[in-house]
Image 1 (tube, one colour):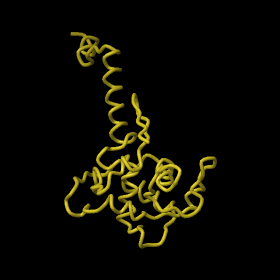
Image 2 (image 1 turned 135 degrees about the horizontal axis):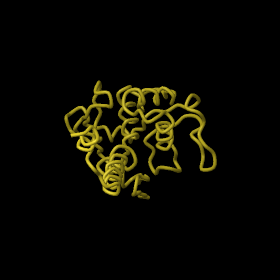
Image 3 (image 1 turned 180 degrees about the horizontal axis):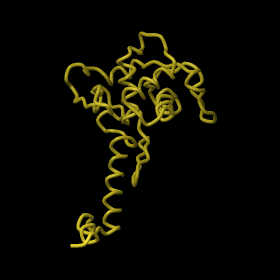
Length: 185
């Protein structure tokens, strides 16, 4: 048996169309599940869930002072969501804009933008959870939802929030994924 024959045996022949189809489906499902579309159970995308949970863990709620958004973003990125600080800040800001949501989940302080203008930088804005957002977390410490490992395996995060109100119906959702999108007003 020649070296070329051994090489051919080690690498199976694969049709490019089959591989592209399988790879696209795998990638699309990964984006859909892990980033782009909200979960119907709590109406949140993973980044939104991670922001709310991180703020809950750090006691940044209705009874506390507002905290710099840059701190919130840093905590979320360091502990749960490694997809970049701008994506986290954009999601945080959107939950605090009265023209983006019917009932705010974030109590904003500072320039959170307008329909025509972008928000100020994270270092200039502050936020805390609203009372309504805390109802998404009611019962989280009572084994009401499953927890999964974070990206590093060092911490646990909820796979979904308990959600004592129908956030998806109340606030709707938008998301663009690979091969599908959602827009619930």
